[in-house]
Length: 221
Image (cartoon, rainbow, N blue to C red; front, top):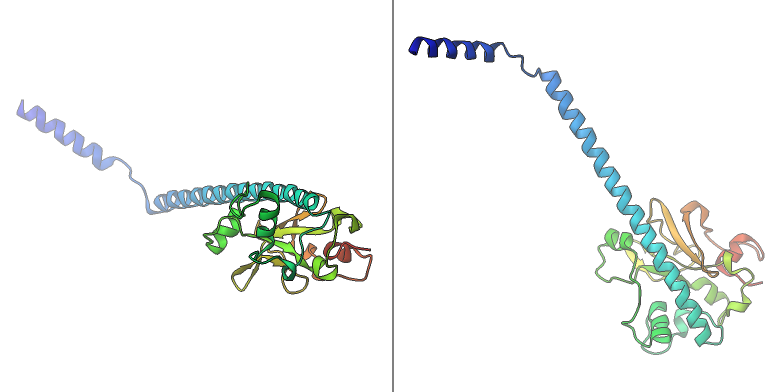
């Protein structure tokens, strides 16, 4: 039995010795393929997450549009005033809407943009959108009926980010919406529709009366 076992061991040893192994080039090729697949998976997951954040952001803005309608009904058609005209104890447009529509600073049926919160590492869950205060500064006491075409005038947009910090108001020239969603900013207009615009399609300032940029920032005749 021993000689047979020895012959079997020699046979197995030769088989292992003659078995072809991976060459260095083949090993590198396998590593490269794995690396490419991993990159594609990561990019795909990131794109899906970014798109989901953008869709949720649009849903938030539409809810804000509903709140704006409720606010106007409660205030004789007036739009949210400029910061200087807020009543005592109100520090932002979001607080003004919450108190008028829901009677509380804590009751809001939406939260902020997840993409902006992630980018700025914000703990506050709902203060990520910025209000077009340029219109209110130009026409204090502005009402919805005064808007020429509500579908062309910005109400709220993805939050202004300046020097790495969020600001709750949009102003022409100095404080523009931030293109947080794949280089686009979600913008809510006063007719309730939302558009995703790249920065180069957002007017930097109001042009002459009656131009698209005038309508975008001011909205009045």
